[in-house]
Image (cartoon, rainbow, N blue to C red; front, side):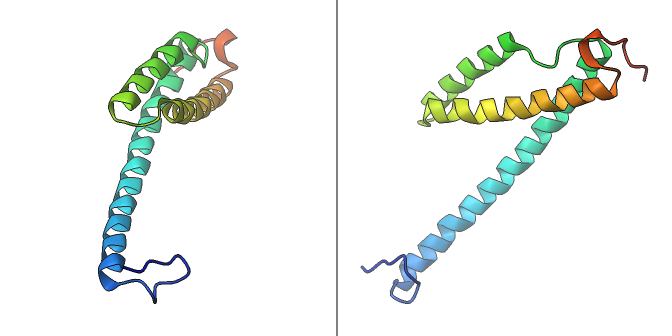
Length: 118
């Protein structure tokens, strides 16, 4: 069996078909990940508004530490590198905190401001 990364001409049709099948699955998984992240961010936006209304800080280090420990354990049981899972969660959490800070600013300056009226 001949495989090549320089083009598809020398690759057997069965290999091309298997590659296409696997890539289709990867594309479906990527789409699901994007949709799951969108749903997660919808929820975290609601959390940001709730925090702003009640003058809570944008970040919750204790919650973040529990989530990291939980995600690392999930990653291990799923045979995924826990360090990668932690980096991924840290990236998401940083974006969430940024959103919460912006929401707090819009609602009157954050943790020291009066609750926003809805």
